[in-house]
Length: 100
Image: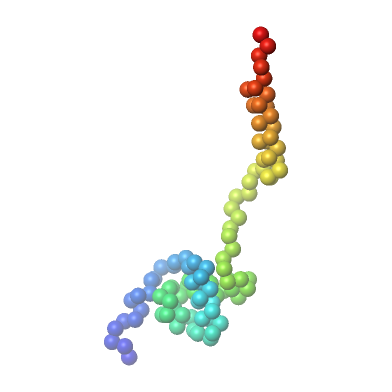
């Protein structure tokens, strides 16, 4: 029985792991280490490790996918057309010689 409390170094709140650390925890899980052993070895909360492992079990992907966010209002083609028409409009207005 250890004389010191070994759970003091484990954070109690959730943390976001980078892809490398999440991949390490999944690798340890695949090597038949228990979640508790991974938690102590990596000093990360149990819920974070469980989330990484569950995401890997569901999707088969070790890294987290980037989120898409809000869709643009215009497609790239429409945006290029707007810029092109603006340039043509301003080019005619600025560079037309005055015939007075």
